[in-house]
Structures are given as C-alpha cells and as structure tokens.
Image (tube, rainbow over all chains, first blue to last red; front, side, top):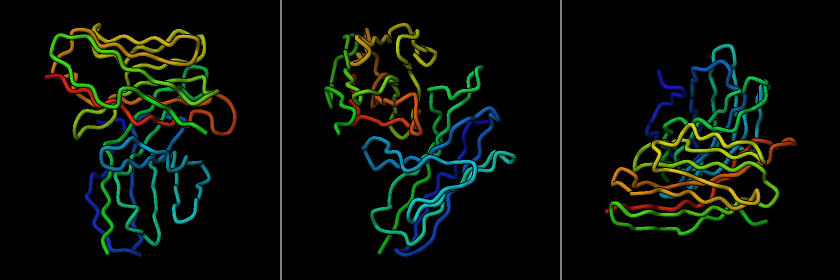
Length: 115
Length: 116
C-alpha cells in the first residue's frame, strides 16, 4: 500500500465550481500534513498546512481526520489560475515525537478549471 | 525575502560524467532537503541536513550520489558516473526548525538534469 494515496483525476471543472480532493495515508505516526500545488514544469509551492481542527485560507479549506487517516482540500469558487496538480504531503514523527524532516508526497491530483 | 535558489537551472551531461548541483537555502533556515522528480512521477526524498546533525542519507539511490552542506548554508549534490536513469529534476527545499512555521518546506526552482 502506498504511504500517501490520492485520486489522480483529472478533475475538470468550470469556473466558479466547488471541488474537493481527498487523500489517505497509511502511517498513523504521521505528524504534519500539507497541501502543495505544482504547476507544469515548476517546483511545488506550499498551499497550506493542515491542522487537526481544520483550517481555512480564503477559498481553500483543509480538513484532517486522524482516526480515518484522511485529509481533504476543498476549493470554492474555482478560478482559472487554480489549474494545477495538488499534492498531499505529510511528514512522520521521529522517535522523540517531533516532526521528522523528510516529506512524503502523494502522486498528486490534476485540476483543470475551464471558462 | 529571497527564496531558495538552485544552479544550474538546466544541465545536460554525457553518461559517465560527474555533475554537481548547488542549492542556496532561505537565509536562517537550518534544515535543507534534496528531492528528485522524474518525468511524470512524484517527488522522491534523497537526503536531509539539519543544523550540525549527521545528515539523513536514507533516500540516496546509490553510492554514486553524495551531498554536503558547508557552513550550515549552501549545499552541493554530486552525482558521479551519471546514468540515463539519473535524468530528473532535482529539487532543493529548506525549512525553519522552530516556530509556528517549522517544517514547512519551501522549494527552489530545481535543476533539470538530462543524461545523454
């Protein structure tokens, strides 16, 4: 089983739509969670960290369910500029219980927003 | 402020040659990471430096790969006797290790390596 699994999509949605991405992870020791976006032939850019209580940043809402080992990202009022690959990312706790540096990436979900 | 920088942006080399890739992290970030991304693939962890601790080399695919970080800042990734399967984008990232944004990693633009 992959450490991080995402629906690869692609998701094709019209401008203004709401779209949700899901991600599951296999290691219950995972400590920190993130969503990155990656544009074609560009580096990944941090979109938002995901906190246990859930968090929102403008049109983006992230949720974490540790019991189900599940993370989600909701994008409201989609813009053309949201077209990208969305990467579910986590890092593990080390033996001391603090976050360990290595990030583990999902394969990404491709989103295309069309006019 | 300035982000993570990498050089060169593109490198074409012949099979069997050695290459050096450079990363300059965000000022003040004590942790530095190398990843690579092959065409159409996800990101693969290579190596991690934090402060003066011994680096975590667990992701290096073979002993042809090595990295160093001098003075706690700039890092160099060296690939010896390059093979065609080494062709990929090599990405460097850095992060703080304290504070509310600790462990949020910020990536450089990458070095696209092509081995012919």
